[in-house]
Amino acid sequence: MADSRAFPWAARFDADQLAAFLEDLWGAAAGDDGLATLLAVEKVIADHRPGGDSVPQCPLTDREIEVLTLMANGATYDSAARQLGVARDSVRSHCSRIYDRLGAANAAQATAVATRQGWLPGLQVPEPVAPLRRLSPQEWNRILQQRADEMRAQPGTAVQIGPYVSPTGASGTAWRIGKGLTAPFRPAGAFTAKAVRLARSRWAVEARYIGDHADADPVSPTESTAP
Picture 1 (cartoon, rainbow, N blue to C red):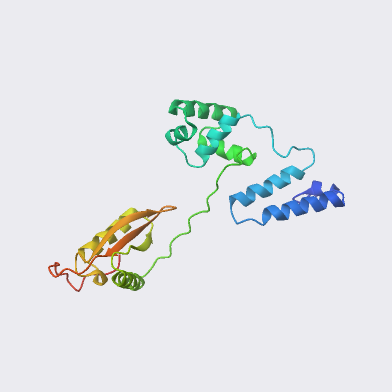
Picture 2: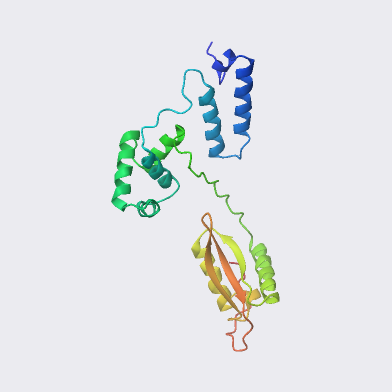
């Protein structure tokens, strides 16, 4: 019968070796739920597995590791060149050599290979963006009324509304606020609003109350207030 144990080689450890392995394993697994914790666990297993080096010999130079780390963290050829103080073509050449040495077709594949082998200690692994809960028109109306009340209580103070998953949604709400097309923000011109980008692919509306205007355009009371 095939051995179904995940670490059959650990059964041959003496008491001290086994205690050290389990202590390191539990320590690595105590991190946040995410890729960084998984990589830490894999490294502990590789460190303790008999007959294998903790980290295989890296074929990349220090500069190539630096370049690949920048690319893996979201840099472009241009931004990586600025950070390294070199020409864009120099970064491109480094990437070409990196791909050749790792047998990779592109930066994504090279990152996967180098990360699995533990060659990118400077890699920043972001947590996935949680999906936004879909709000009903009634919930949006309550939120807009609350934000409008906050702004009226503090004229000139910026208040954020959102978040939104796209710039279009945020821009549309900002336009309607400025035009007084939503009931809490009437009359037109009483508020200024603009779409602003937040971190992690999220947008919001930044609005301010600047005072009511007697000459504001009338708005039909039947128009929806939800963004």
